[in-house]
Length: 150
Image (cartoon, rainbow, N blue to C red; front, side, top):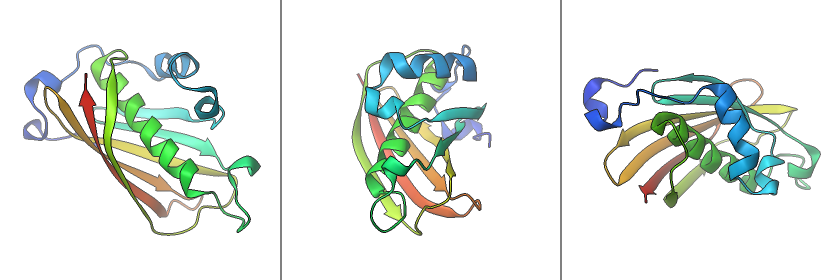
């Protein structure tokens, strides 16, 4: 999905977007070991969009037999940081100001897909939407987020 020109400020357009390989290489350098252990794999990127896959590993599944919400929220937050890195062309200090998630259906199976979209980026704040899709491609968790660029 390409955002229309008026959806982002002109200074938000990145001339040096990070490649998928560069993003993959940065994951163990930037994130805590338990985030690295989620197994997030960037698989597709275009202007304002990053798609990742994540295994639904047994250690993420609670007694109900489905992936726990905490793992979904961590995946959403991490996906947005990776999208911001790609858009900025590098890692820059930022912090999550708000992350709100709505859980629409349980996630089971062996993997899920996370799609992070940059809705708007200004000088100091960025707004995003992250969809977590179950193995059948159905929307399971939808998150919205606000980041402060430090």
